[in-house]
Amino acid sequence: MSLERAQLGLTAAFAATLPVSIFASEILLVLSLGVLAARLVARRARLFPTALDTPLLALVVWTLLAASFAQDPARAHVDAKKLLLYTVFYLAVEVLSRDGDRERVLQAVFLGGLALAGLMVAQHLFLGYDRLDRRPTGFLGHYMSASGVTMVVLLLAVAHLAFGPRARPRLAHFGLAAAVLAGVGAVAAATAVGHGLLATRLCVAALAAAGAAVSLSGSAAAQAIALAAIAAPVAAWALVVSQTRNAWIGAVIGLSVVALLRAPRLLWLLGLATAAVLVLRPAAITERLTIGDASSRDRYYMWQAGLDMVLDKPVFGQGPGMILVAYPRYRWPEATHPMQPHLHNNLLQIAAERGLPGLAFFLWWAVAVFAAAIGEARRGVAEARAPDWAAGGALAALAAVFVAGLFEYNLGDSEVLMLVLVLTAVPFALRLGRPAAA
Image (cartoon, rainbow, N blue to C red; front, side, top):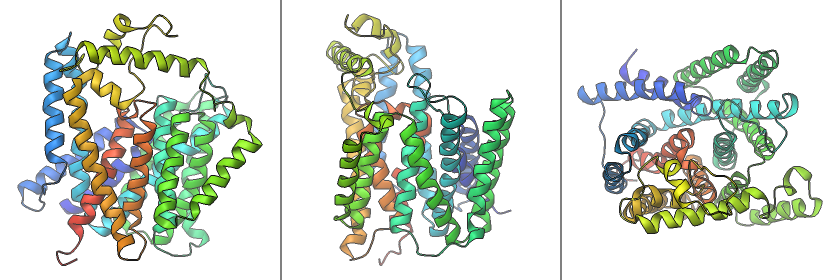
């Protein structure tokens, strides 16, 4: 097998396991980076400069400085190792720059996303994950991570259906989606009788193998449409039963972006759907549409404590991973919980951890991300055609993640962060893969 095919298979396996296993996805990421390094040494691949390089370098350097000035520098530097995940961006730019490879890798995300959403629904229906204090987590360790990843999968699937290639799937094309859901059913059944760990591991391994096989087989466009057509409603269902408000808000924003790009009049349908929810008041949703609950009140006092942290140490902050240690000193008496590992807001978390310069570098990076994503999504509109589905999906999902991140530190979840980095690579990969004359 050539290095290029090995690269594609490993990257697709990484994409398929991203929604279901941080352990498996990180192993596959290391293997993918190893193959990329071999290709670079053999001069069979090149890394091109992007608009994100400088702000990302500044953010990395300042994060390491903040760790050095933290109360516990050794612990802060250990937490800062998450910076290594930003290599996902450069791997994805190189692999996704080829049209066929881009489609196959993103199709692999649908595989893992369908498995995650399917298990969340099964947990809600059959395993007792139907209370606010016991929400479905799918394959992941926390319901916040599961809902954030599911939100991204939903928006990518909707974007594929809205902007992707037109083909009519036959019944056989739904076989892969059916196999994924059957595997999820087996995991749920095994969990019910106390053997969920082995079933989960087997399912994750099967998803990795399926992702690699799909990428190397050159699967038909109709199969990708079939996967997206199943993943979208299952992910929407999973998102509802997750009872996670920040993901709901993010999903509405992302769907609005898709509607604006596809046909602005579709916003009326989205508005009507929102109005219907407010009128019909389904209990699963309306019980969470409040800011008077204990969780919302705790966030208010948590954010006040975060502001105090920033005012106290505005230059280098408390240090990466130091919020849990520092929080008791800044906690307001009215706060519900005495300990908090993070501040449930991306911007406030970064400012408190890395100071105001760290926040400025992060905002510089985020602005560059959205400038590239908007530019690529608008390219199709300017040419009187629909945008590339990957560009439209990336913009919608990025908007959703950053809006949801105003109410949750979702970029602190490695699964969400790596998905975001794959999406930030899409506009640069599209630009790199376009003929110079285009």
